[in-house]
Length: 251
Image (tube, rainbow, N blue to C red; front, top):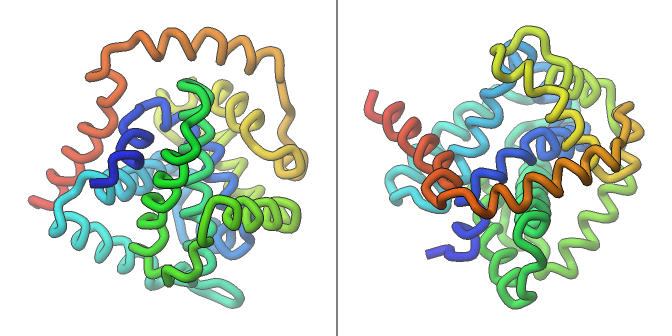
């Protein structure tokens, strides 16, 4: 039972990292090209969030059969996503995507609840490897420990270019005009949070502006209020996405 992984994923505040995770993923040119050329992102921006959250929640709480079903669906969806220079099933692309999920999860949890115990974070890191290995990333590709991981992460953050494909996806996400109304009215908040949580170089290359005072003020209000919310409310996204997943599987 991946208790540390569940501890991170059960908090609904994790959804606030959605924009950051997507733009971090798009920093890899292969991921960005695949999404830009093979998805209807501008018209269905919430689909990638739903797919990602369903995948993570299933890996943490799903039955063996549910995990098998979800992974078969993911692999089928990835099969046609390929072209010159990229393939959605490339283990190095999947490693990068899984890495962004770990980074965003840890970052948000520490923002709200404070620094984790190092031993617990070591265990969490190993538990997060399922997000990579379940997508056919060879176990030996997942960095051996947190120190090796952060070396891998920092090297990529310094080197990965923000391509035109990445900027297209960023624009479709942060300035979307075709999505549902509830998404569009929240885009100013999404832009604020996403810009602040991105590494400075990536933020600049995406053409985003930091608003440190606004973000700090918003975080100062959000942190104490969120921690006072009933656990059932904080964990609602887990129940919602798992229920939605099981409903879809029954069809």
